Length: 322
Image 1 (cartoon, rainbow, N blue to C red):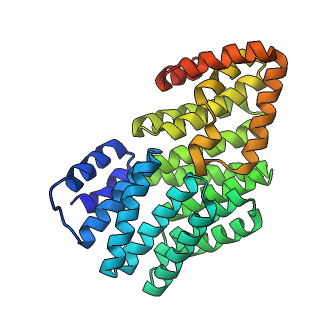
Image 2 (cartoon, rainbow, N blue to C red):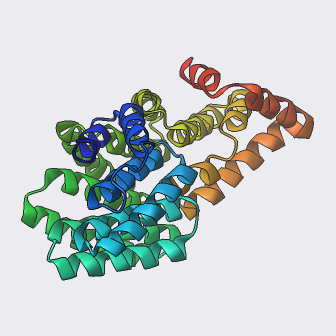
Image 3 (cartoon, rainbow, N blue to C red):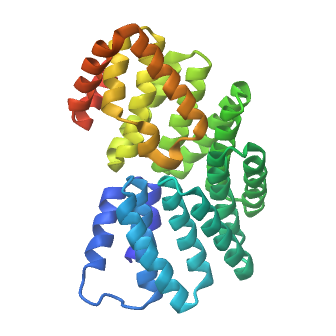
C-alpha cells in the first residue's frame, strides 16, 4: 500500500505524511527484506526526502533501493530509482555522477521498452545539462522528452518538461518566450495537482517576472510558491524564495531589507542545488556587491546578521510583510 500511495503523496504535496508512513514501514524489523516492494518504498521515501531538500536521507534510501533492485533484476523500477538518485546527486552539485546515472536510467528504460521512464529521465538529464551550461543540448533533451510525453498523452509529463524548457529560455534571456511556457506548465500542474512541481514552476515564473521588471507579479507568484513550500516542509524551496524576495527589495531600493533577506536565505544557490543554475551565481554576486556598496561593510554585516538570526519561519513572515 505504501509503495502504491507514494506517488499520491508526492503529487498532492503531502510530503510530510508520506515520508512518515514510509519511514514507519522501513523501520519494521525485517520488513520485506530483499523484495521489489521494499525497493519501491525505498525509492519513494528517497523521492519524498529529496522533495523536502533532505538530500542526506534521500541518498541513503536511494542507494539501498538501487542496490536491492539490481539484485532483483527489476529493470523498470531500477531505471526510476537511478533517475531519482541522479536528481539527489545533482542537488548536491555532483553533475558528472548525475549525468552518468541518468544515462544508465535511460538505457535501462529503453531496454525495458518503457517510453514513460525514458521521457522522465531525458527531461531530468536536461535539467542537469542546464547546470553545466550546455543550454543547446539541454533544450534538445527536453524537446525529445516533450515529444514522448505528447505521444503518450501525459499532461503531467508535458507540464514538467514545459517548466524545464521555460528555465532554458529564461537563461537564454528569452523572457517573452519563457513567460507563456511557464504559464502553460503551471496550468497543467494545477490540473494534475502536483504541488511540488507547481511550486518550482511558480518560482521560475517569478524569476522571469523579475527580469521583466514586473515586481508586483513576481511577488504574487513567490507568495503562492512560499505557501506550497511551507505545506511540504521544503526548506530549500523557501530559501530560494527568500533570495528572490531579497533581489526584489534591492531593485526597490530597500537595501537593508534586502541584506536581511539574503542573511536569512544564507546562500540560496548552494542550498537549493538543482533548483538554481550557474547563471544565477553572477546575478547573486552582482546584487550583493551593489547592496554592500550602498550600505558599507559595517551596515551590510549588521543587516545580514540580523537576517541570519531569524528562524526560517520568521524570515518567511518578514518576506511576506511587504
